[in-house]
Image (cartoon, rainbow, N blue to C red; front, side, top):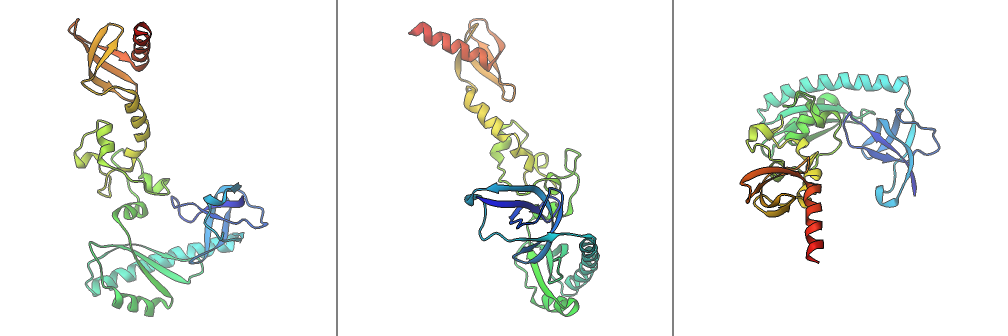
Length: 275
């Protein structure tokens, strides 16, 4: 077992585990930590706890200290500098006539590196751009190409539901989303209705998917003949979330609605009478 704290470096970023050392750390504290890309400033979102070896990536980096007001001032200065760097980079991209869109700029806490995030349809030869930027900022330059989902996460916005984008507010990682999820939930397959601002399938299709899959395993298929309290009938409709079935009773020539429990009880009675 290892003692760890969970730390985020961005509002809805991924949570990373660090070794708290002997420092008294509480959830909500801002801390200075050692990372693979240098010293960074992050927020504790998971209080100190013990986890199994399989849940951590060894060796664990250490928390150096609790952040103070001076560290917060450095973070604010870095954000201001990043905005200036964004404007400069946009000018240089235009000057070199590169087919790329600059999305965001980030300084590492120790100013050891400037990271420029961009999107592009294909590969971009930005060697000359890097030389120009390095001569201006006098530090290490990294240009990182990202996808459209990452772009939406960084920029934020309002989704079709009228709320702020999930990815920019609380989703740490993107999970795979498929068109099958929309089909299982009986949603319109019109791309404009099930796609987010990024143009990809909406992340929220995943939220209820497990519940739908569980329900589909319990419920009969459309067109299947089943036993009901009113006789044998064919399933003509399903309300998956509420576990309701619309069944056309052949003898009565009408459609009746039953709960899954009623159908299961009827099946149990049928089995007992058969025995």
